Amino acid sequence: MRRWEDCEAPSLEEIEAMAEAARAALPEAFRAAAAQVVLRVEDIAPDALLDELEIEDPYELTGLYEGVPMTEKSISDPTGPDVIWLFRRAILDEWIARADVALDALVAHVFVHEMAHHFGWSDGDIASIDRWWE
Image 1 (cartoon, one colour):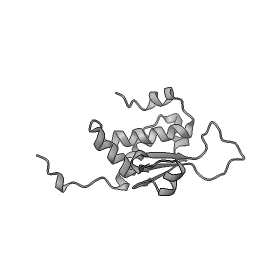
Image 2 (cartoon, rainbow, N blue to C red):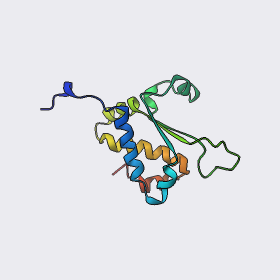
Image 3 (spheres, rainbow, N blue to C red):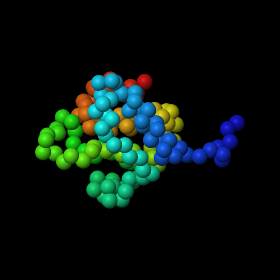
């Protein structure tokens, strides 16, 4: 029998490593562009961000893409890097609630969903890369 009192929740660094593994697993055609997106992992979304998005429960926001999708970029857009934010505690909360998926698979799913915003992918594009339902 597993002794759960001896277990610790994965750290920010461990969640980041799972997301980086998902980035490395993207199809070759997308890896170079995906490498340009900054990955930030925080425990929970800041209050100001939640207020801006009109989200009351911080556990509802597992990830966020901040930037201009590649399909909409122009030379007049700001030059700062695009960022994918992952929120560890919200991801862990969803993982526990689901109880039917491995944590690294959930992190990959959230990461790929946010990366989809960056690439301007359709639902079909996402489904061909992130076989979430299987």
